[in-house]
Image (cartoon, rainbow over all chains, first blue to last red; front, side):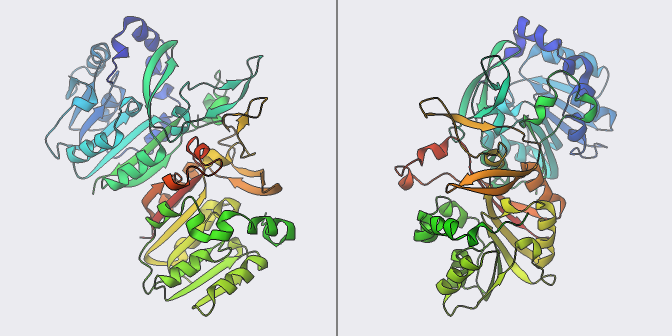
Amino acid sequence: MKENRYDDPVFFEKYSQMPRSQGGLGAAGEWEEMQTLLPDFAGKRVLDLGCGYGWHCVYALEHGAAQVTGVDISERMLAVAREKTGNGNARYIRLAMEDADFPAASFDVALSSLALHYVADFGEMAERIYRWLAPGGTFVFSMEHPIFTAYGSQDWYRDEAGNILHFPVDNYFNEGPREAVFLGERVAKYHHTLTTILDGLLRRGFQLRRVVEPQPPERMLDMEGMRDELRRPMMLLVAAQRA
Amino acid sequence: MKENRYDDPVFFEKYSQMPRSQGGLGAAGEWEEMQTLLPDFAGKRVLDLGCGYGWHCVYALEHGAAQVTGVDISERMLAVAREKTGNGNARYIRLAMEDADFPAASFDVALSSLALHYVADFGEMAERIYRWLAPGGTFVFSMEHPIFTAYGSQDWYRDEAGNILHFPVDNYFNEGPREAVFLGERVAKYHHTLTTILDGLLRRGFQLRRVVEPQPPERMLDMEGMRDELRRPMMLLVAAQRA
């Protein structure tokens, strides 16, 4: 299923109110750790899969990328991305990332921020990205953590008074679609095991460089709900290298 | 804490009744997948950390290992291991694996089966293992999965009738000791995040070759409780290579 929730005006409006939508990369809890996984962008050809508002495309250009290609299924997201990029050397393509196709060795860096959990077949996607990368190229991504996606609801288990008891895990080895609620709207995502993600990359020839579960930085811990983020991992950050 | 539960006669007796203690490797649910991670043992110098009954030492010898060194804190376990090994070219050393020390490049293969979750400092242990391995040497291990160790009790969350609801995760980023019940006895283990384990190996120079969460094989699914093993991962299998 290639769902285009972000072109639903209500969903898009809610998304645009999120701190990370308003404040950009610096407002994203995982950004500080994500930065430590990024390669040097100088002179590189960069692909961003599920580029959304284009924050990472702009960042790559600001850090010397020779050209940037952003792919996203949502026209509304791309409109914002184009506006943010201004005259930068970027092209934006409206496609589900599963439908994108590029000649072999077209890019030096592939990025994907919180989008791969919308893809049904992680391994097939990894295989295509491997092909699009030049030898030695890097693939850096964040996605929802298997612990976070397994159960489905993506919500805490609470007592009758509404207090958090713990985070539930179930159906872990039953990979496939999950229906979660995000910003009060139903969103279809896919649960992949850690094996499918990491062993999937290794089996397709990638070398793993970094595997990080980000924790919110100290300075954000007093934001509402942020301390609960220390109770279970929500995201997985990975840096991999093509042979 | 270097706990020696296995020299407690009651605990040892209970352990000796487990299917995996009686039936050996073939009776361990993860063994079939573990085998796919193992290197060729022919002519290799093999170290087994937390060798227990010595099943893996015997296996390595049967598959051509030149010599095998088993380390375990429990004298009772080592007595069984010595008996099982017979005249094989093995030496057994009674030590907590944290206290073991060997000259650099002493081994070609380091193994550890379900023992590293008893070690407080995973990174320090990985560093020492790296040093003990010869260049190109491999480190293959199984340990309890971070999802399994985070909460502490290692038990399902159940309804009032005792039915399993799900598996609880909490305190994920709070690494350190946990007290679980195993075979009806209290056992001290350590929770490590996936980041500490995998990124810890990568940062110390290991390359990751395989990362696998084993599922019980089809033929074991009708054993009591085995289908529940598909509801959450219990173990992590890793094959890593020294540069």
